Every structure is written in C-alpha cells, then in structure tokens.
Figure (cartoon, rainbow, N blue to C red):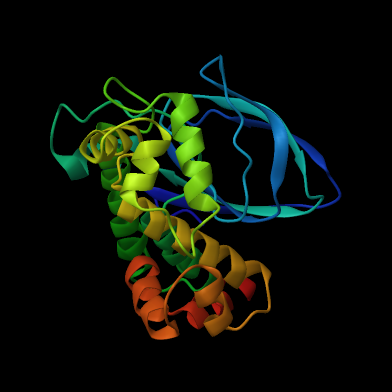
Length: 269
C-alpha cells in the first residue's frame, strides 16, 4: 500500500532455502523479518563486504536513500518480510533542518522501538482507514529519529569502546545468562577493566548501558518465543529472565505498545 510519503510492501517467499538480495532504494527503506531465518550468507553494503549477521524473525535491515545492500543467504525455505519505504523529501521537510546526519545502512539490527513502529505500520496495511496516512507517517518519523540517535551513539566499536573480540565475549556471556545476568564487576573482570572503564566502553560500543542491553535482549527473546512457540506468557516471562509475569507484561507493553498476548495474536493472524 502506498500512502504517498510512505509505502509498505509485504513480501513472501516459499520453497527457496537460498535467496539473493538486492535492495538499492531511492528512498529510505526499513525491512523487518517476519517469518523464517537466514543462518549463513554474505552481505555487501555499498560495494564493501561486511560481516554476516544471522537474521531471525524480528531482525531489522535499514538501507538509507541511495545506498545499496546486496548479498545472499541460506536458511528456512519459507519466509516473509515487511518492507517500509520512506520518501526522503518527506523526512527532510519533517525535520526542518539542513544538517541531518548522513545515515548508514544497518543489517540485522534488533530494536524493540523500531519493531513496535513496524508492527503498527503492518496493522495499517492490514486494516487501512482514513487516518492511516497520519499513523504511518508518524511511525516513519519516529523510526528515522531513533535511527539517527542510535547512529550518533555509534553502532560500531569506535575509539574508547571495546575491541570486537572483547565485545563478542561480553555479549555471549550476557546472552547465555539472561535469567541470571553477570554483574558489572564480572563483566569488567572478563575483559580486564575497572567497573567504570567497562561501563563507558560498553556504552560506547553498543549505545546502551549494560542494564539496558540485558533488558532489550530479554525482550527480544520473549518476542521470539511469542512468535514461534506455544509457551504461555508466564512461561515465556521466566524463560526470558523476568522475575514475574506482571513485571514482564508491564515491561513488554511499554516497549512494544501491546501486551504479550496481543503481540502474539498480531503476528500470527
């Protein structure tokens, strides 16, 4: 559906374990993986090879206007994606500034705020009404603002951040212990830094504090389980590391804009 400044396309594929990708939009493009997993492959951004990130349901790809993402991947034989294209002149007029930072492509991003916005766009695609244009335009602006903030904070390891090797070690440790996350002192000791040094370096590398990163990973795991499993919301709460189902429900609704059960119904209809 094309709302003028924002367009949404639902893309489905069946019977292909391997697919080739080329996305070179004239306008800003945000894509979320709805179904199916890409496990191996190669990615090239603006002609330069980048490390491949496995993409599961909920993984987000952002390709800004006039950039190019090309590659191939292998994984599940069926899949579906929501592609939202945002007219670059609409964004320029909405921001009303001349020095909007140059946005960079991001492949395989996990972010609850952007996922929530894309879910709302999907709702309008399924059930359009006279005010759908206002809704999708507002979500498009929110996504671009959030991407600008993330990129200003830094997606990649920069000066003062953790090395790529240390960051992977720390992230693997956190991901393996979401139910009982390691303390700041444990993580700092693992890479030979003081608590204060580690806190600053981790935030420089990820744009998030360790606490926020743990919470986002818990939410990502919960969202995956809601999409792909038949576990109850209570079981998912404990599986994802939340201390109680009430805390899980409140935190999830704040991040995604809907309760866990509403989220499950939306993605399975």
